[in-house]
Length: 407
Image (cartoon, rainbow, N blue to C red; front, side):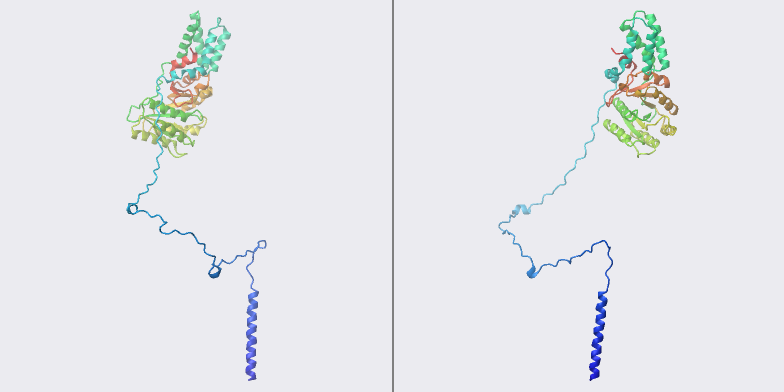
């Protein structure tokens, strides 16, 4: 019996020891390390729903009886439900097609504007020629006036020599006589036998193709858009080719000009191949049966050989459809003799057929018309006289000289 009691006591002691070891090991279990600088975050246990006596009291809301609820009448309930239509979003209105100003006599109508900036040349010459005694000093002043107006050295010398001879023969010089004399000599200098019409007929079953070239900053893209207006005003249908892919806004600008007169613009990705776009423009013009395709090329410095070679490539690719009818060089009239250098280099790369002089209203150097014609042997066909959309005018020598010498 004693042995049995002793065994039970030993068993109880063993169980107690084992329990102590388990509890001790649980207390010594380490928590995961935390950042030394961080503050331990205590997360509260989720709130238990309140039930029974702990539940919040129910808030009584006012209720309506069935008599107080408005119900639809029988007819309305049985009627077919009305369909709710989606709001109709109107398409943006198409841009209004403008009617360009007729080109016939446009330069005459712009004569007053031209005269304001050019008459210093004509009035200066008339004042000098009206002197009682035309000595050597006076003739030198006449020569200087012509040179300042960018007439050029050789044309100036020719004009002075003819004026000397004509004045000597004329004898008495009335203002009317001098004006008539000066007008005649200036017209001779400008040349009245040039064909100044912009050619728009290829003579084949293809549109007339006109390529517009020039250096940066001469207003080439704007001139192309204005030329489209000139052609539309003369009853021609036009397709524009935006082959200026180097300037991001060039294609958008040209398309805006085209949209205003109903001319479609063929364009490509920015930085694309200009020759490919020019080719596609002519292809589209043929498909549409257009009268004229106008190709705007990228402005380029005349001193950059690579860019000038690329211009020659555009010309060769376009000529796969047929010969180019016009290659118009856009020159800034304010650049004077520097414009002649540009013209000379462009003429070596492509066969220039005509000149467009821009910004002629802002300079008294109207003699550049004479100089550039003499330099290239090709006529000035169009002149820009302002910022207005219809301020590009066909060049008319008589109207131009009338504006030079005034009334």
